Amino acid sequence: MNEFVNIALPKGRLGEKVYEMFAASGYRCPELENPDRRLTFENKEAGVRYFCVKPSDVAIYVEKGAADIGVAGKDILLEYKPDVYELLDVGLGKCRMCVAAPKNFRDDNRRTLRVATKFVHTAKEHFSRTGREIDIIKLNGSIELAPILGLSDVIVDIVETGTTLKQNGLVVIDTLFDISARLIANKSGYRFKREKINEIKTKLETCKENKDDKNS
Ligand code: PRP
Image (cartoon, rainbow, N blue to C red; front, side):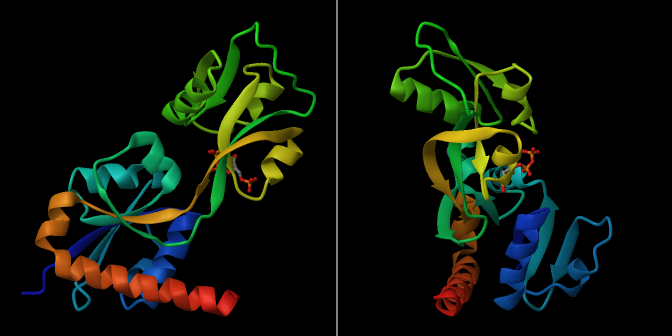
């Protein structure tokens, strides 16, 4: 029996690169390449079924078993700590988690630091390590606006090229960790479909190595 492996793919820019890697590894799904509003696609011969979900939701689909595997950013894995296996660093979506502030920012320890972020746990963990008292302002996007409008003193956010910070007069004042996309697996899904999931992992790994060789 050709059992399907259900794969949660992040939608958007990262998702396109991730899908290209699956396609180059032998898991192409032509229907997915003609985008319409459908969110599920399958390739019977290759035994894969793709679900296109919001990048920040991939880990939930995989943790709950709605998908057997998926590709999620390390930022999401560190923020939500889902109970999943991390199988492979696929090497895509490279960026870093940073604290940033307006160019002229000087920290005043007598005041509680106001921190705007999507990554509440990550920010809390970081400032509890440094012993700095903070108030969190949870936002869902356009975080860079917060210090400009006086809503926060600093932000904790993802920096990729640095363009968004630069264009909004902000600078990095601390780097928390490097981020890249990871192949993750549901724990019981991995037990039951180990062979097929390992086959996918190995092929993605080979694809990544070939790409690394080309770039070196
Ligand atoms: C992310 C992040 C920064 C930006 C960084 O935002 O939150 O705003 O990318 O990229 P850069 O360093 O290359 O400029 P995203 O595009 O995901 O949108 P968001 O505002 O909804 O978070």
